[in-house]
Image (cartoon, rainbow, N blue to C red; front, side, top):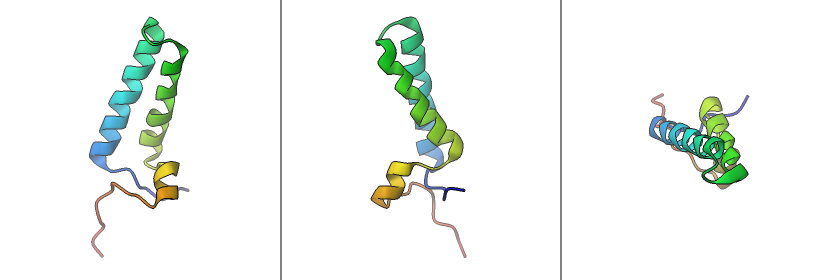
Length: 65
């Protein structure tokens, strides 16, 4: 559906940040704003970031033809 533009290291960082934000929201450390952590989790799961598409960016390695 979407062109993959999130590479391996980027994907791992998105998962870590997303889980950390959600955990802090659950513990009340940062309040409801921590639920924004769902966004990096979803983009990591899909392998595609809409903002990267708009900006013409990609962290995926080049595919050999």
